[in-house]
Image (cartoon, rainbow, N blue to C red; front, top):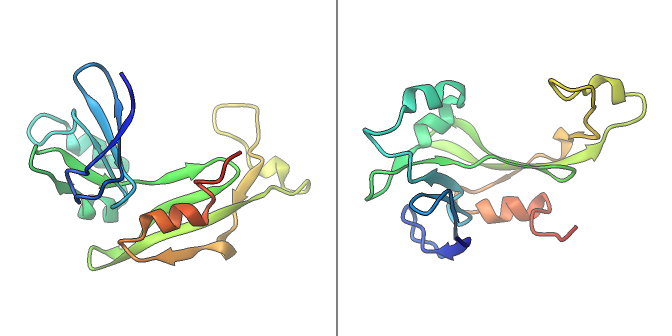
Length: 152
């Protein structure tokens, strides 16, 4: 089972990254539209009510369904030591992609950022001063802004 790039069933871009879950099911992450789904998230077959309990209202409003009845939601990307990209806005008519870069936690702040359930602390935090908005069709630009494509 190999990962591959394919045409997105939701938006038609050629930047849909497909990763196998098993021999029959796949995850779909489209870098063209910024949405994700998998072959288990099918209308009438999946417990969307439970899944959506922790989602922001905007993400619930932005969900869409493809021809295979898979339900797609916006992606939130958190890259350790780099940044975050997320759908940001008031409603489906007023939203965009936002990117925020991370900065190192200062020595004075280190004790404030404990990782839940551990004795460890985060080394980086979101720098809200770097928050930048991107149009709905520029998810990939938001990823580039936080250094998603930069090699380690």
